[in-house]
Image (cartoon, rainbow, N blue to C red; front, side, top):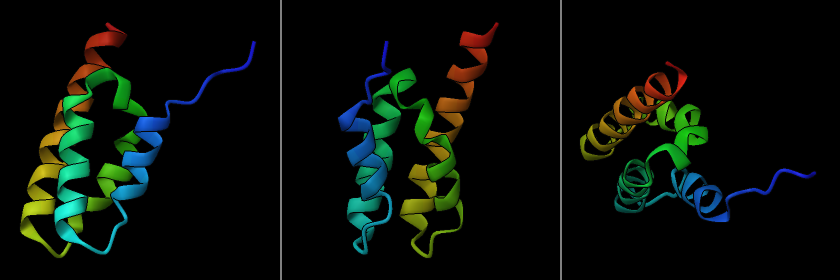
Length: 76
């Protein structure tokens, strides 16, 4: 059986690379709000931790921390 991709999460991951910092920040926030469904976005979010915009870095940090906590919670 083939694994189905989550198109919403894939599109949000793409938006993390957008030139507009508001789009990047909003994409990171949306990934955080999607919870465990977004765990595959964790590597892309980690790349935003050094973003030039502090609002993007802050949202990416919150999202990454949230997803890491979910990953460990589901593994236990």
